[in-house]
Image 1 (cartoon, rainbow, N blue to C red):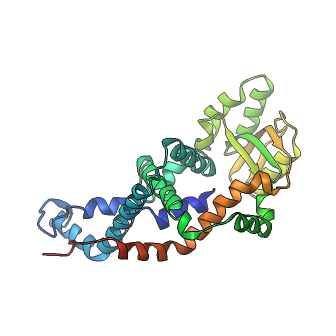
Image 2 (tube, helix red, strand yellow):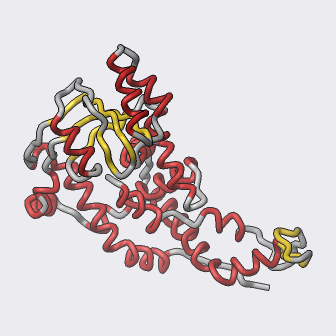
Image 3 (cartoon, rainbow, N blue to C red):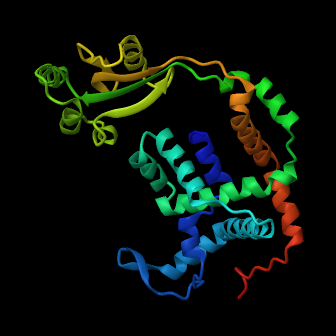
Length: 296
């Protein structure tokens, strides 16, 4: 469950939240509050709302209608998503984005908050659950999916590391001198590192496998022993790194029994993604849906 899945949630389920805030209850040109001026010429909130309605209203409303159908289907089937499930899913996204700060910055691009994504995570998980009967996955399907994609379930060798990133070699050597004198790595990361996302956590980067970091950094980290700090600064396109390796995990070949739940989850996601549009169309025929967005 990585950034691809996160983007899939935004694409498939998440309503355009910021846009919906404009559209719900908007005034169709009647609101005279000024939202911008050009040489003292006013642009009103009503004009903005009218434009948003005409260009994006149908898309936003369809998203809200679809989300409501998912909620009603879940009620009908007595399906619920727990706070724990939402928290676990949210934690997955924070880890894949390198921490909660990085994730929240990513959400800002969609004018979304943590509460917004938690709501859409809930809707996404509800969708997966209510569609399971519709897509009809058997144990044999899961087994076949695992065999076809076995390599993707293998665990690659991983390194857990922390780093202190600085702009120039002189500063990097200054940090190394302080480390050699017994000063605390985490405190120096907080004070010196230009990687603000990791600096707040003492420079912690978590686990990473081959291909996830820039080549020079990755080569150095994989060559180090657990507990070792790089003896010289490691130069990359981002600056100069002081690296500390805190743990290593060996590569593990997957077997079906230990990967069965993950395989089922991935297959469900794949089938839901493939059949979601058809399911929505079918459900829209079952419900009495009335819209009045463009009524005068």
